[in-house]
Length: 279
Image 1 (cartoon, rainbow, N blue to C red):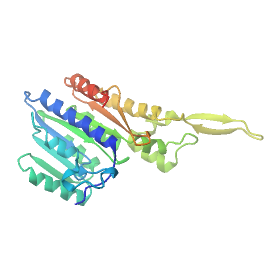
Image 2: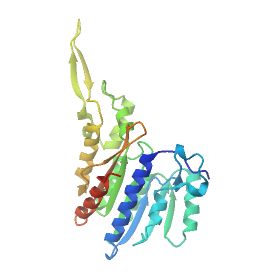
Image 3: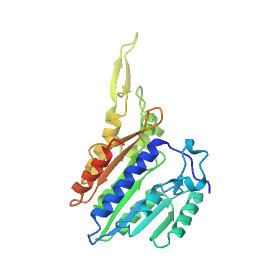
Image 4: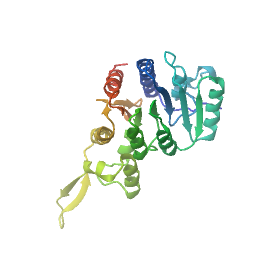
């Protein structure tokens, strides 16, 4: 199939952060008696090209997150689970699996919000995992993130769609009911995001006008999501990585959260070091 065309330098930045973490994670646990799983919840096709890659040959297409996980070699993952909903991309992932038949790859066609909780429920005492939540927009439900946190066995990278969230949270009015429902699903309840709005009173000729407004910018929105993560996971990396488009507009924030009480301090130290690095 033709690899999807999307992203830009921010995509490469995101994948380099992930690659470095997977290398460090598997090295840190290579002498531990754990079975290590990598789960890519929005796996895509396994390769991609950005709009400026129009004239690249197929064999020069950029490696996606699934390929990067396969290439971890100091202590390879015992199992790799690639979840994708789109049938054409699933076929590409299956071809990748067949080319790497010795790597314990499982390809699942399904909804990540259903497949991840099922995986979490199946984990044994000696299982540890890294889950990469890399949605296109607002697909990840908070219930999915909560299921990951409850295992206390998973390190999780979460690409939070800050631009999409900001568009659903206008500065000069409340979101529509449809927007509120999406935000409720993303944050796990209205009480976790609606407090960014404050009632404003404007003096009118006949009556005062009451309306809800929020401050411009993404800081409050990002803080709401980080607070949710901190309430669910053992530890969360101090500073998420903001990923901007070519016009320097924030598109996503890349968060890291660790669930295991014993391993979280080390995991977060590694993630913080990578996230704060000036590429």
